Image (tube, rainbow, N blue to C red; front, side, top):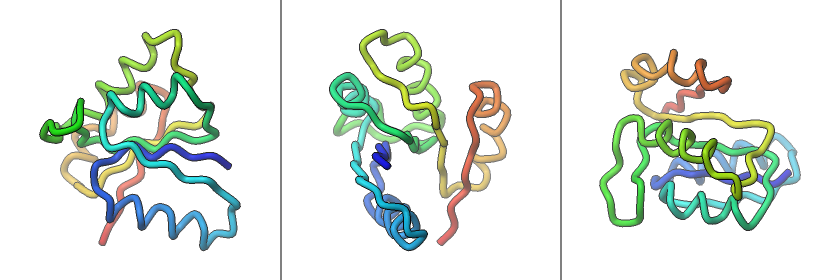
Length: 117
């Protein structure tokens, strides 16, 4: 399984990687830290699963924004050159952001995973 994780938090990506590998799922996990970099990657490669942080910077060096992952996803839908995986999951470590964004995630036909420490 080839997984693209779009998250600027390296510790969270490490946790995701460990969980996938401990489940015995043979995987290649690639991280991009911004929406811009992830869009470019999705134009070049195909993935089986896309994990997107809800609080995501648009470009490298930008500050993460609440709902940045949703904005990134909306741009992907308009990008004819980007190859979207069949499975897309939004992730966050912020319970309040999860509650505030839950309906928005569902309206995009996706699911939300709240990660804890």
